[in-house]
Length: 70
Image 1 (spheres, one colour):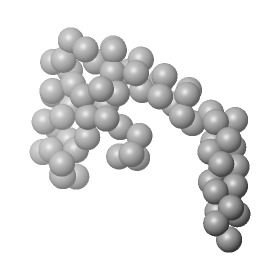
Image 2 (cartoon, one colour):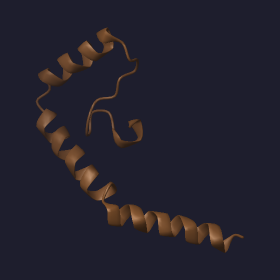
Image 3 (cartoon, one colour):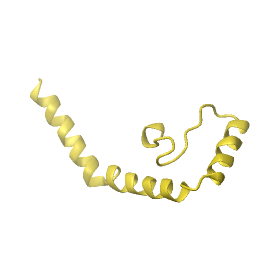
Image 4 (cartoon, one colour):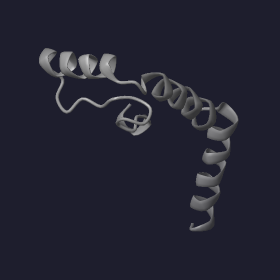
């Protein structure tokens, strides 16, 4: 999941998975004026990078590269 989230751009990343750390980040998120923008960025990233066709293209490219180096 961390690979999908850019801290402050499309979400917030926890440095540690403790209740206090979660509470701090949620409090920070509620205070941020750009939280709507982060949500929009997250939706756009999912739309463009997790699209089945895009993933298929990446898989084909990876397999083609592997076969070229056999």
